[in-house]
Amino acid sequence: MNKPIIGITLDEEEKQTYSKYPWYASRKNYSESIETAGGVCIFLPNNIDAINQYLNTIHGLVVTGGDFDIDPKIYGEKKNSSKVTLKKDRTDFEFKITLQAFKKNIPVLGICGGQQLINVVLGGTLIQDISDSFQTNIKHEQPNPRNEPSHYVNIKKGTKLFKIVKNSKMFVNSAHHQAVKKLGKDLIASAFSDDGIIEGIESKNLFYCVGVQWHPEFLIDKKDINILKSLILAAKKRIEK
Image (cartoon, rainbow, N blue to C red; front, side, top):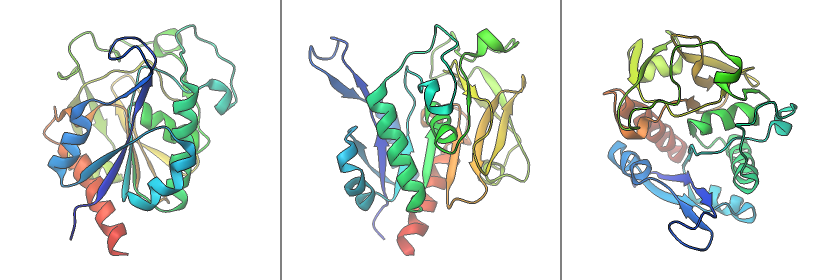
């Protein structure tokens, strides 16, 4: 069997760093870790008109993280934190391609902001800023490098995630200031940090819909690769159908 094709969403920037013109970006380890897990990757520009063609090409979807937030209007709230920053075009694209992927039973893995996106697509809400509204000693925006772990997450027994990682604890990195608040339709929380922040979600009914708040593509915890392999396995099953 050919390796399944995994589509990876891209960040979009206008800062005159890489180029003086608008540009797309993704860390190499998003694709490299998927390839290590047994897939091949294509990056998906934020072109809403191309969504159907993308979904006719890929067998699985990774919704990536980024230094931005989902507009609270989308989940029925007013902006209540000065730390909320938006990328409208990227959010519009990721919302629509994720929704269409669910309709087509294409496996979806949400990473960090991708987990938050999944939750909002399915009708959930977000904590707009953890430090503004939540008492915790955990630094969810860790000060140490992103390729190092910063705190443990507790995996709930009986969940898909527990079956995937075969462990009740993982030592993970953390790079987020928002988190899942109210769960979306048919979602359950599969992992928590010690302060109660939701660190993993999954759908009870969709073919494969998993979100994690950390970045398994860094392969920090020895069980991170299991998460990526589970996406590849789900994509292969979809091909076989």
